Length: 209
Image (tube, rainbow, N blue to C red; front, top):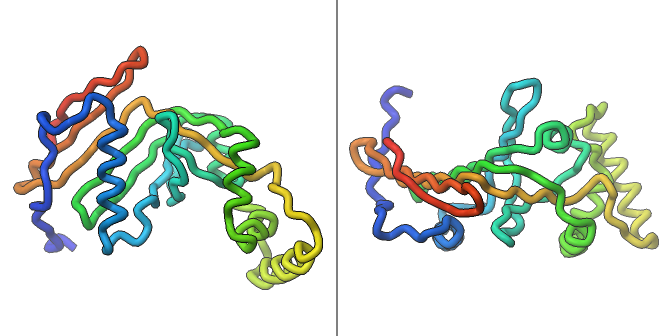
């Protein structure tokens, strides 16, 4: 492992190119990630929460960026849902490794409205809607067969029954307090730009690599 090494030469992040606020830069980088054929899911992000004073991380999918908030959807009864209910702060990490970039978002979390959760839930394929009813996310299950049997049962049920969104399933919106942009550079002297929000005003500074 000690011999695994890449030289970062694919970009730069200089002060004269920075916007005053962080979101237009994110949208630009996100579009770059969508255009990159090597990045299969550009909206994949590592969500880190806190449990018993320790970090807990997993990959989720960004589904919206609106009103300067990052939105994803999940089961509210899941481990991450329970953790966010106790400590409504989290980190998001977008690991666009093939572009030699990453973005870290640090912020506070709230649930989106029931109407917004409904709108997204019913935009999903029927199979995904049924999956939200099948999975009691993060709970123990005896076997894969048990899941498959419940899936078959509910698939048959919803051939005639009107679909509803589970009350325990919905969205979270993260309001960023900090957004850090990282661009790999040669000699491990990477570009790191940190945007910070104070009194509803964004400022930015360069960090040592």
